[in-house]
Image (cartoon, rainbow, N blue to C red; front, side):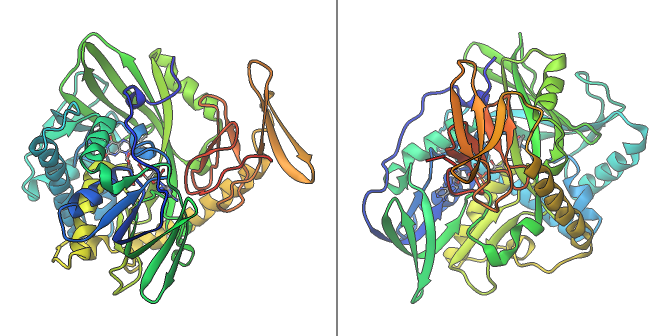
Length: 476
Ligand SMILES: Cc1cc2nc3c(=O)[nH]c(=O)nc-3n(C[C@H](O)[C@H](O)[C@H](O)COP(=O)(O)OP(=O)(O)OC[C@H]3O[C@@H](n4cnc5c(N)ncnc54)[C@H](O)[C@@H]3O)c2cc1C
């Protein structure tokens, strides 16, 4: 069994590393679906735009998703409706446009990325959730969506809703194609370490060089350059476990339930091979008891060929943050908090952000505004998210002390964690996340050090492979 995402199963191509000072109009930081979509929208404008990625494009959260392109998004509309029916309708419209935009980019540019039209389903197997699905059906049909009430053959369910105009794809093939189309504007293995602002320009430090720009787009998933924005208190991190298994045939469907535990699945036909991709369990990261137990649970029913985990950012009001970080300032923009629905949102974010930069009207700027006012739903989530952050910090200080392969001790006055691998080789790392000094928990399945508070991850030798940390935890 491979302990990594099925999407890594293709040959990578590489872009240059940044090795000189540069002056540009727009600097995009981060090469996931968000960063590349924004670069794509600006590529043919008269603004000189570059993208810098600290690792390889697509290898962040994007490569560990299940890669459904759909606007039927579990309980998102139900959650938004609790505070505003109008916002739920606007968000639905944006997602339908996001799905359409992504599909158009793929077809117009003939991108070979296993794009497949499939029906999306949300379903329940619990009586108590029937009214929720009934009201979702009403909401969808009132908003001119052709939804159908039905049942799903593949899983136990008492009711399912179905829409037909949605897709699945291979995210890394898509990202790599975009990357090759815009190669001259992309720098990989190029990490932004600091951003300063002086006289109306941004100065970003990358690989010891300076990029001067009029605009900065933060497409880093977790936007950690923003201390005054108090991001950890406006969001929480959710972790899910995913497996892929070879199967005889595929079905043209993708589905997700609205019950607990969360179950989500789709199929992939890749050459002669067919796979079922299956997600099981989603937790607010502070509630994770044992990473290994969660993987064992996932693997119980199917013997997977691939298993991996992934994290995404959940916002207080279930609407992403896309746009101006500071009011009336078009020069510093973010897009994040997709609530696990990053392809319609990431693609859509490219349009919203480029419209702000190019001074074009966009009807969704207010809905997604990162400095939007606190609403009722936010007030409810705020204490939960603060509590969750604190719980994760307390839990992380204990580490996973019961794991025999891991030893915690002090060396040269520093707290370190030592992992002894199967060959008996010791791997020593500093046992604090550089982001906010939370302790780290060993993920014995994927062999990484994970921060439960905000989602940073590190290899056994301390290289940072996922933010918000921007720094390694190497010892010496
Ligand atoms: C289990 C799971 C399943 C999911 N499945 C789906 C799905 O089926 N459909 C769907 O629509 N969404 C899905 N999502 C959500 C989706 O995957 C994400 O929302 C989306 O990929 C986020 O994209 P991004 O570009 O914002 O982040 P990322 O892909 O993480 O990109 C950010 C990039 O920024 C880079 N970076 C960070 N710091 C720096 C720096 N200092 N300098 C330079 N570069 C930097 C990182 O290396 C990274 O490559 C899923 C999420 C989870 C958790």
